Amino acid sequence: MPPPDVLVRYGGNLPRYTSYPTAAQFDATVGAAEADAWLRAVPAGTPVSLYLHVPFCDVLCLFCGCNTSVVRDAGLRAGYAELLIDELQRVAARLGPGRPVRHIQWGGGTPTTLPPESMCAVMETIRRLFAVEADAEIAIELDPRFLPADYPPLLGALGFNRASLGVQDLDPAVQAASGRIQSLEQTEDCVRRMRAAGIGSINVDLIYGLPYQTVEGAGDTALTVADMLRPDRLAVFGYAHVPWKQKRQALLPEGALPPPAERLAQRARIDAALRSAGYRAIGLDHYALPGDALCHAAETGTLRRNFQGYTVDPAPVLVGIGASAISSFPQGMTQNVPAQAFYARAMEASPDSLPAVRGVCRSDDDRLRGAVIERLMCDLRVDPVAMGLSHGAPASWYDSARPALRQAEADGLVVLDGSLIRVTEEGRPFLRNIAAMFDGHHAPAGVRRHAGAL
Ligand SMILES: C[S@@+](CC[C@H](N)C(=O)[O-])C[C@H]1O[C@@H](n2cnc3c(N)ncnc32)[C@H](O)[C@@H]1O
Image (cartoon, rainbow, N blue to C red; front, top):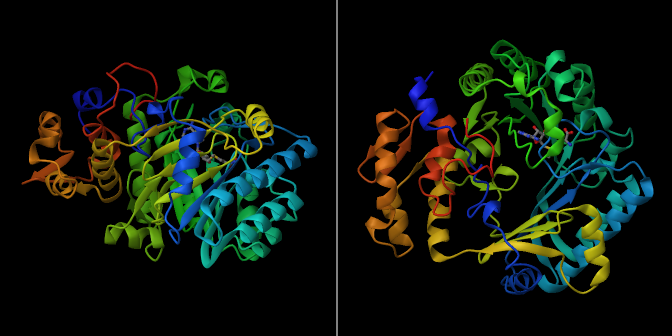
């Protein structure tokens, strides 16, 4: 464990750097007009990836930081799917016919809350409007407690080949405090049904830092999941406590949240458990079995980071469809209207325009900083001088980051080898802090726009 002064030095609130600039830089000066122009500017033949957001869940988990709500009315859920189809048509009209698609990700929320016929209709629309490649990755997030009986075969028939299941922690006391009661049997049953339906790759999400979570409990959860479910990949998230943004989190017993040193110890125990079970650590918070494409990408320097976390998807354009969905283009990023009711209103009010309402343009400086941050988050190494050269910047471009880098070296988090920065294993949990040294927009300490770094 790092000494206490290191924990103090690397505390504070930080982004997860799933993009750079981060969503904290989005504002209303960028919106539908930019989304329109940037879609039309994608060169013919350039592949795009699709992200479809479904903001509904059957129940709300108290820890959840995502844009979700409970909507039980099947008509409303079907109506939302109609809007997704409408938005896909608007996007396809701007991209032109035959646009190649290699990655489709459904997230939320819980996308299986859409009625099966709605899911079919959206997937048919995608296949009609885009040239979905034969070996495209088609992935979906699931809640194992609420997977309708007919859904796994439907997903198999629609070509889905990857599913992410939320598990978080198996300890009943943690589950009760977090408002998410889920037995191991429920999860096992979900995995069995998905595999039987031909969904080849299973991912599991775990969280540490939840109320009443312990080092032993977190480690036991990781070992049990690795042994009993043998997922291809795991994402191990530190609980992001942002009650000023997500009111439901205020219902968690704050006094039972583990402090930073305890969180770090939980993370370390999960890490040891998963490595001992044969998994490889990927970037900040992912694990994969050795034959997995994520491992191959991490070993060959081709791993990418996007809003969904780590990916092998190299497409330069990601188009987000649905309420709050974010799109990424070489020129910048745009985000759709966040609240589902307002998204619906925006779609209905202007039938020809896109529902993007905020975003950010990327400057040349953003592109350089973003490239350095992405390589750090993916490869745990980067040469900022070489990266600067390839972006036309002098070696002095990151002089202001050098004192912090030297301190990080003294703390054992990085090794500075000429202009090469190598993040050590001890530094892996602090990747966000090291990335933040290259963040030209990061707000001064104490500004509460992100969760705690540790
Ligand atoms: C978008 S959610 C979808 C989960 C899925 N609907 C389910 O119920 O399992 C994906 C993952 O985000 C993670 N997550 C959600 N809120 C979080 C928070 N506040 N801090 C850290 N991770 C969080 C959880 O691990 C969750 O499984």
